[in-house]
Length: 289
Image (cartoon, rainbow, N blue to C red; front, top):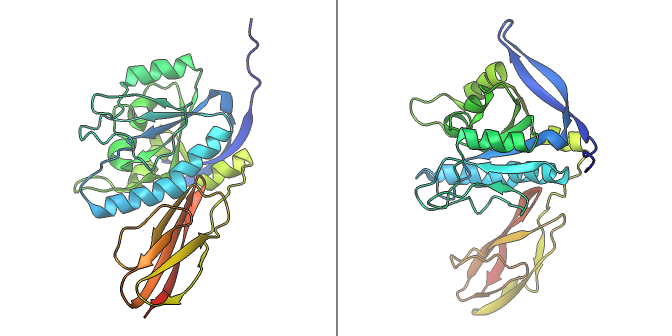
């Protein structure tokens, strides 16, 4: 007979809302990581046709959602990708960091869509009693999807905690605001926490990138080729360069770029890692005669 795993307890600071006196309260919850899962709702590759949505989503995923999931994985927490089916065929957002140990439901179009019962059966089979929720469209999806906070909370079986800065607010006409939605969660369905609280509870030290770069020359005669060298610190897994001349950008760590025309060019580097990102822009950095 296999011995049960040892308890792995953390103290997570959470926030709730008291409807009696209309005030927030804070509570240190003791969670056993052996009985805890993170549920990520609706991580679509294709989202609402709104440029601001994509910008907000990408920033949130890189700087909040991925870092939270990465820290929880380090504690052995099961990550569950649980979403409504994505009929656009986009599947899971490519910015989401996945692990072979994550639980992902595959849908008809490449999306993921467990039913509430499927999710419940899976959670019970894993002995999960604590659910840490994050995801997209806080008011529409994170709370209201079939496997969202509202439906799963009604089972009365799980302690639900929403990571309030690991969700992507997006308010369509006629929908509740992000703040009202979060407060409703805290009042009726559970509590909330933050990325920093998760890091603190796990005693996790993030390796957040700090972007830096240099080049072999800053002046030249057109056409001239410049060699850029990444000097970023922290744990970096992806580099996004913009050379300022309207040509295609690159994700190479140490790229070479040819400037075909005279001009003064601003160069930017965005360094992205598992625990966040950082950008650096050098104005008029390359000057070609």
